[in-house]
Every structure is written in structure tokens, then in C-alpha cells.
Amino acid sequence: MPLNDTVHQVTAGIRSRSRTARTAYLERMARAADAGPARAHLSCGNLAHAFAASPDADKTRQAEGSAGNIGIVTAYNDMLSAHQPFEGFPALIREEARQAGGTAQVAGGVPAMCDGVTQGQPGMELSLFSRDVIALAAGVALSHNCFDAAVFLGVCDKIVPGLVIAAATFGHVPAIFAPAGPMTSGLPNDEKAAVRQRFARGEIGRDELMAAEMASYHGPGTCTFYGTANSNQMLMEFMGLHLPGASFVNPGTPLREALTRAAARRALEITAKGNSYTPASAVLDERAFVNGMVGLHATGGSTNLTLHLIAMARAAGVLIDWGDMAQLSAVTPLMARVYPNGLADVNHFHAAGGLGFMIGELLQAGLLHGDVRTVAGDGLARYTEEPVLGDDGLVWREGTRASLNERILRPAADPFQRTGGLSVLAGNLGQAVIKTSAVKPEHHVVEAPARVFHNQEEIKTAFRDGALERDFVCVLRFQGPQANGMPELHALTPVLGSLQDQGFRVALVTDGRMSGASGKVPAAIHVTPEAAAGGAIARVRDGDVLRLDAAAGRLDVLVDPAEFAARTPVQADLSANASGIGRELFAAFRNNVGPAETGAAVVV
Image (tube, rainbow, N blue to C red; front, side, top):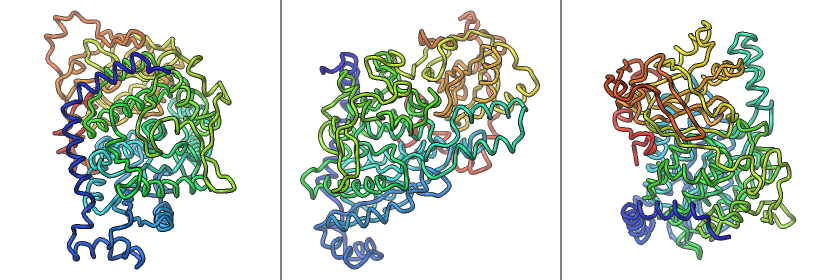
């Protein structure tokens, strides 16, 4: 199919806007590729240090430099369920690399925090900044310059974006992402959400809440709702950094192991020593990022990606913005209903046809660039195939061309809605992002008086006191990257969701973030300029009427323009956010971070 006109125009605009930055980036990558890995140029002392702990057979190959050497960058820890399976991946990758005539080493580890643990806690104020720390840590790992390819092991919220930033920065090195897969299905997500709301209203005790949470989060693998972690996995397939069909295969299965081994073998095949040299810089071009944005809209993915995609792209010299996302959302059909956008989880989505079906449909509709470089070879059509274990081992076969459950997955010609699951809002409060795919249409427009808060606890206290039982727009400010690191505010979902269920018209307006699992309540998030930078949100007062209109893409305070402009922005005492639980270590990040609309980044 011919490429959709809007997709073509958005891509052309990005290419034009990025020309200077992209040209300089590709020139740097070409120089680095020409120099090649430093092994051939290291002194004997340097080289001995690099391979001192390797088995003798590996030492010989590494010292000769004739075989490819894979650098493994791992985000393993056994607190994150999604990352616990990575414990055994390096051994598999080393073994497979040896069988293919190469070698592999763990180049380094990167931190990986669990946002599920830190929701509503001080540690959440480090969460967004951890993305940049991960990029820096991966850069340290690869700075040894001894590797012909990199295999990145990471899944969750900030980890994949941080690793992609590093992969782009070392873009002369081929890069493959090897996922761990989702945990098996547990307590249905809608039942878990109902229990949380009952606890927020004081109807049940902590023991019942704990039982429900443990029945939901119960084993190794990614949490099964379609939040940021699983949106990341979607993105890696749409952008060609996974092997086809790798995202949603459960951990601890023979197919999962086979895909991990195949990733190691393919990493060696695409080095400069092989016949299919595919540096990360060739994969991460403007077409790949457009494909990623289309995938985000078509699946109703996490709002966090509206920050991360911009930061990842900038690391590759590609300048994308919220305007690009808005234009693509207008022509991208919402094809999936996965919690919080529906009742199904990612295992049900995968069984219904999953990403392979979606990519095939979107290619047929002309909404994706098919002529891209990927780690699997040229062309995105490979990603319509599905991996299976046959008599001869791992093979790929044609994936399903029809949805196997249209309550979960619909064709592009008959979607759940004609536009994407994310929208950009603009108005006299600035710019913001809203996830509409999980919000019922009757809640897409909310006009009500503002209640202004400066921290989450104030909202929870007002809720417990019965002071919020009316129509209102909850304005939670001083939650942006400069103020306190832009924490997720998912802990407010049970409170606001309960009020909405009681029949009140409520909405959230904030310069902070919401979790990828949020969405039931209309939320204008990432408001920029943020309050700490003197943005308009800092001039809102209790009782001002706000209008959030997701249908029209507007976010406005309905106050006389002259009066509103004359107000002095409120300032807040942010000293409580400056220390404790490691926050004092991140003062330099808060002081130097960019705005949300450019990715809320420090390192790019």
C-alpha cells in the first residue's frame, strides 16, 4: 500500500527538522565505525585486562580479534519480576556465541528500579532520572570499546529508553534487545483495581488488599497490564530492535530460551565482521521513530513514551515532538483493548494475534514504513511472522492474518476507534498529554472548578475528609522535572476513580506523570511549562473553572485573560523534595533537566 499522506508528511517534516543534527550524528558514527573496536589497537596490558577472567578458548579468540565479541549490558536484579529471568541470560548468550564461533562478555550492569514499589513514595522522585542514569551506566559499560555488537537486557519503564539512548550513542555498534517476557496471567486487572478502590474508601482492610495484589503480581516476568514496560516491548518490535515476535513469550519456556540464543547468534551475524553489518544508527532513523509513534497510538500505549520517544530520538540526531505525535494520532486507528484500555492482559493480546497481526494490518493500511533496517534484516514485514519451535529448532512462520479475538484486537479497517489512544492538549495552560483510550467517551470533556494541591498527601487527606465529593478538576502542580523529578502519580487513581464512579465529574491536571496503568480518569499530564518554571499552571487558583476537552485537544482556564496574565505565579517550598531516599544525589539533575516537551532529559 502507498504510504499514508500524513505519515509521509510527518516523516518528511522530521527529516527536514533533523537534517543538521542527524548529519552530524551519522558523521560521528561513520568515524567510529571506521576505527572499529579498539581490541586490535590495545596494548598487551590493556588487552590482558579485558580478557583476564575469560576461559582460555575465549581468550584466544578475543586476543586474535578474528571472532566477534558481544558486550552484554544487563539490567538484571531479582527484585523486578520482569528482570529476574535475566539472571541466566548471560550464560545462554555466552554459550550460543561460542557455538557460533564468537565470544560474549557482560560489559556492565545498569540500575533498574521498580516503579510499582515506589508509587506514592519518595523514591518515585528518582524514577524518571533513572533513565538518564541508565544511559550513562550503559555508556560506561561500552566505553571499554572491546565489542563488535551489544545485547541489551532490559524491559521496564525507564530501563529500555535509557538503554536505547546508550545504543544510539554507540550507534556504530550493532544492538539487539533481548526481552524476558510477561508473567503468566494472575488475578484479572479489573478485579485488582476494584479491590484498590474499596480499600481507598475504607471498605476492606490491608490483608484483603495484600492478597489481591499478590494474586496479580505473582511470578517472574513483566506485569501483565499494558503499561510502560509492555509498551516498551511493543516499541522494540515496531522499531526493529527485537527479533520478530520476541516481546510477549513467557519466561522459563523453551521458546523464550531459543529466542535468547537466537538474539546472540544474530548479534554476531550483524557485526562488521559478518555479511550483514547493521549498526544501531542505521536502524534508529526517522522512519523507525515514526513507526514507534504509530505503534504507540494503535495499541493505546503508555503516556510515558511521549517523553521517552523524544529523548531516544534526540540521541540519534532525530528531532520529534508532540506535534508529530498529535498528527499521527489523528490517522492511526486504535486496534487493541488491553488493560487499562480493556479487560484483557498482554498474554490474551498475544494469543489473539498480537504485534505480528497489528504490524501486518498497519503495513497494509500504509501507516508504517516497511522499508526500514531492522536487526532481523531489511523490511518490517519480517515482524508479521511468529517464532515457533519445530523439529529443526527455532523457525519463523507466517503469523495470523485475522484477529483470533476481536474483543481484544481489531483490524485496522474496523478498529475500536478511528484515532489513536493518546492526544496532545493545548491552551492557555500550556501543552499537555492525555491518554484517551482508557477513558470512556462521556468523560472526554470535563469543565469544573479547580481544587489546587501541591502534593499527593493533601489530595488523599481531602478525600478521606469527604471534601472532594463534588465535580472538580484536581490541579496537582510542582510535580514537574525541575520541581521534584516528575514522579508518577498512580497512587491517586483509586481516589479519583472512586469519585468518578460515584457520579462526580472529575479530572486531573498536573505537570507530573501518570503510570502506564492509569487512564480511567481523564488526566492532562506533563503540563509544560511546569509550575517550578513559572508556567501558567502556577497561576491557577481554587475555584477557577478549568475545561479539559480531549475531543477538541484543548486545556484552558476560563478566567478573564487580562486578569489571569496579571497574576503572579505561586512559588512552592520544595525543600522537602531535596533530600532523603537518595534525592540529595540528584540535585544536579533537577537543576539541569529539560522540559517535558523535549523529553525531560538531562543527557541528550
